[in-house]
Image (cartoon, one colour):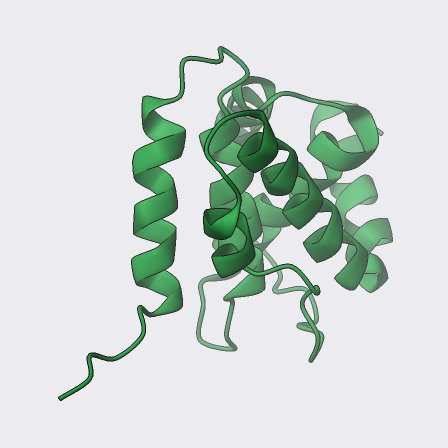
Length: 143
């Protein structure tokens, strides 16, 4: 009997093994976590997961923050605010999927693919950009 293809979550776990073992101090794991969380969000997903994911994607894609810098912003936001509003979830969440990232050879090619994945997901959520920019401006004076 043929085996079933790996699920999106299985592929993300496989990618996490790579990103967590990555020696780059930029901490690409955070970028992958944000892209996956936002891309896989459902109406029953906790709003904080989607908001933090979008914050991370915005900061990485538009402000060139490293994953480590994004992680620090997430901690600051968590300490300042407790209530989160779920952004609208578009039907299309980007053309690049975790399977595309895992298919790229480990090393620089996969790292570039993680960045392209972040860009793809962030662009799919363009309707949420103003909400994320406003949140960062009000809470942390980052815009």
